[in-house]
Amino acid sequence: MTTSNKKLALWLGGLATGIIAGTLIYQNREKLEPNKNKFNKLLSDWQKSGEKLKNKLVEASKESIERGKKLSNAAVESMN
Image (cartoon, rainbow, N blue to C red; front, side, top):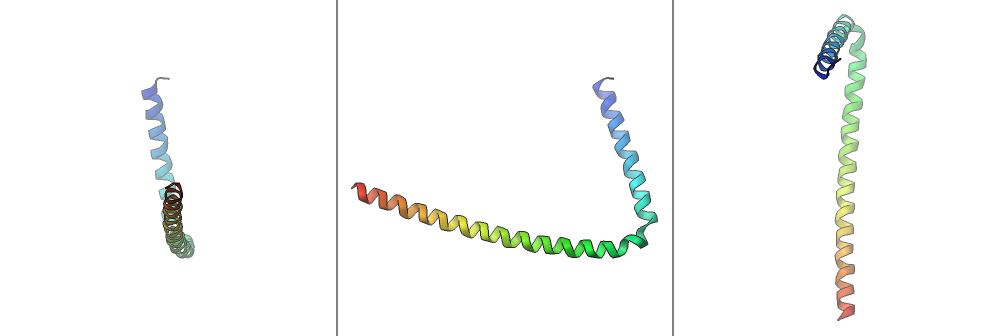
């Protein structure tokens, strides 16, 4: 099987899988509605946690940069 045939087969398989998954989701949308709300709540919680983590990382990196500057200045002064 050549590369182009493999790519075509994978593309068609992905397309068929997407169609089947979409059909199943559409047919079961009433059953999935409560889960959708739970998922949206979890997603917003994850986003908040990610923002908090990002802020802590930025703060920690700023502190370490300041400490590094102080150490390098102290080392330069001690050599002079």
